Length: 205
Image (tube, rainbow, N blue to C red; front, side, top):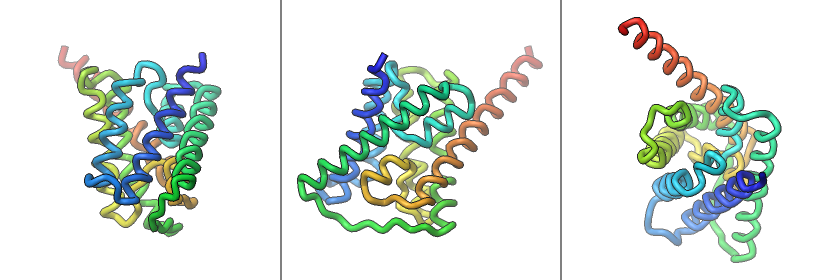
């Protein structure tokens, strides 16, 4: 019963800690690429257990289209926040230092929202079964990379994850609201497009 919550905890902890290490300059690979690879690997390793949300905004977006019930959604979010907080504590104990600024401007919120729309549009394609299982991690990871790139180009830190934002000390109201609103829009937009596609297919048949 608790394996899916443990999977969300471990996944969020790992993703957050990888980002922390990357911001400290430990890895020679850009942070968006590392985040995308990490998420993709967790899709393959624990996707069958929890769905690999490892992001409160993703959980809320899936809840908005009735792909997860309220009790599980709340438990997922708690596990994700604990995972990110644990990564933060580990980073502090290891004395990992880096400089990051969390803006509360409307532009930051819009950037996070726009990036999240692209990210969750890709996630929804997997959730609705329109992506071959063998490609699910690639699609989700690539969607995250694309979303981060868009958000960063628009002026945010490109976090797209309220839990990770807490864990890397890049948290503000905009790093919470932007991803949540973007997730709901992205999920509902894909659901609408997907249902429209089925109607067209039925008419042709």
